Image: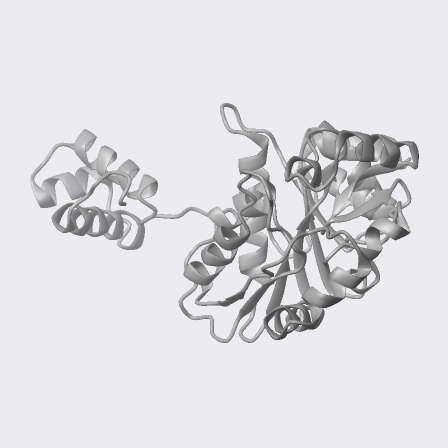
Amino acid sequence: MEKKGYGDRKVEQLIKVARMYYEQEMSQEEIAKEIKCSRPYISRLLADAKEAGIVQVKVIPPKGYEQAMEQKLRKLGGLDKVIIVPKKNNTSKLNIVAKAAAEYLENVVRNGDVIGFSWGNTVYAVTNFLCQKGELSDVIVVQLCGGISNVQNNIYSSEIAKNFAKAWNAKPYVLMCPALVDSKEIKEVFLSDSNVKKVVEYGYKSDTILITMGAYGIQNAVHRAGYLSDEEMQALMQKGAVGDICDHIINEKGEICDRDLDSRTVSVTLEDLKKKKRRIGVATGQSKVECICGAIRGGIINILITDEETAGNVIERLV
């Protein structure tokens, strides 16, 4: 509503018209007669109500419903659930997938849940689509991996936490330390700090996690954030790196690619991530396919939310 600059009077009118149309099931012509205006004006008001977020439309398939491609990928990858979103004209793949992920999260979150999240554009996009759930209480959201960058890159960690807190009245915990440090000893110093330790402990307590699979190469978020040089990236690629999950660099089997590097990574361990009850992986795009496959093969995720084209490419790699 702030984006359009609506005043209280306009908002009141939008709410009134929306309730008459959607709740009282009045036709647009009936509403126009009631408030003495034209039918096209009512149509514009209803469109404004949707744009302002006053009216939110959700399509909820029957429980157990599955598209053929979803079923194929679920069985092929040994996953618990797959959500594949069809492409919409003039809408970015990231946004349609992020919206689907937000809706899924809203359906599964419960009072008292501890939800872990990784940082990055994809997870940030998901939280931008979260709807207000004022009935929720005692929800905790916690960052699973370090993310403070030493360069000018917006990695959204605090914004992700704020979005969760705003939508769900959640208590946020952000891991205020780098993703990667110079030595195991420095990592231990960070983890011994009482504030960092508290966040990490909540990360281990989480039973639902929202993570993304990072592409490998120059577009990789860990690289863009300044943690790895071009030379280090090349060396990791020669070792079979396909991407990162919660800052852990993995190979095509979903295994740690470089043990020394991983020992300096500030994150909930990959093995612990695999123990979570609900491991939601959200990703889209050709550059993410190899990492998605690695995450599936390694059992890192058990729920995948993606778009049709990406899903098709993943199926081809897994067959």
